Amino acid sequence: MFDLINQSFIFLLESIHNIIGDYGWAIILITVAFRLLLWPVSKSQMDSMAQMQALQPKMKAIQDRYKNDPQQLQQEMMKLYKDHKFNPMSGCLPMLIQLPLFIGLYGAIMSPNFMVGQNPIFLNFVHLKRTGIISHGGTSYDGTMSLAQDGGGSFFGIGKDNLMADKDMTLTLKNGKTVLRKVPEPNKSVSFKPKEHFLVGVPVKVATDFSKLNLEGYEGNIEKIGLNVTNTATKETEAVTFTPTATGQMTAELPTTEGDSSLHFDILLLVALFGVTMFGSQKMMPSAQSGNNQQQAMMKMMPLMFTGLLVFFPIPAGVLLYMVVNGLFQMIQGAIFKKGGVGKLMEKPPSDQVVDIN
Image 1 (cartoon, rainbow, N blue to C red):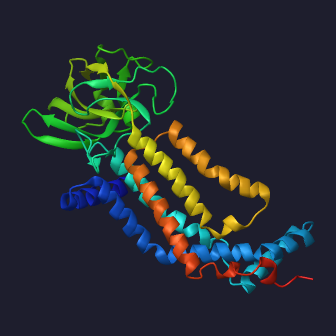
Image 2: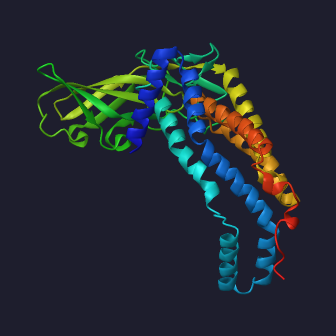
Image 3: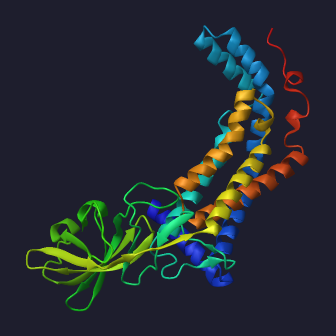
């Protein structure tokens, strides 16, 4: 299922790019179009949040009265929801609908089939496939794998070198024909040596047993196997060519070099904009006007926390661009909804909108 979603987004991004010539604008157009399609659902979510806020005093009174009788408490709460025609789960629908978009976009941008070679850019500024505020990287598909040379964990986008095989491979048969096949369990069937530490200038040896590739019917008929390999620390992808040996193994060597270290201001800007749009869209939510001091403090801290996570656990800039545009759209949409009366349940204090249970 995820493959179908990823391939659909790759096709969509490529199709729009072929028309307008820019992947960044393609991401923006897809995001805006998707949010416009979700407009009625988003309006329903805002209404639901406003209604939930308005019902809070009565819900609190019911909880206090029946705190020692869980069964009666549940019955009274269900009756309250029914009387006010309120579905507490309705606010979750937009988030669930957006999840496939996020997964599809992330998978498309990270796919070796998308934006190969020189990274396409948005407005001559944002490299959409770049990750990390600071990173070591090189050029994909130049025949040499760049190494981060960092033995620790992830810090500002710098991670330990770790090579991962793609899930697709191309068989070149002795008669000249090519066959596309899936790699069964890439992380297990293809091994890289050394596993713990890579040295600049020392080729990485890649090996796999023929039996692990599930190639029944092609024994003795394979000239070579082509497989893409990605360094998770630099996000650089290289094409590796395996050749068979007399022992039944498929082996290859991948030359290495030191990656160029650089500070990515475009990533820094997108991360900062994400924090701003998250804070702004949060202020547009009806729930931002309610809650105790502790809840209010937590809501104010959330944009900072999520922004910090993007610093230490980076994601592709193309996905960041989607998140920024999505947040900006939510801000504008929230302002329109509030001005249009979506938050009408909040025009009076909640205590004036509900009937006391006594």
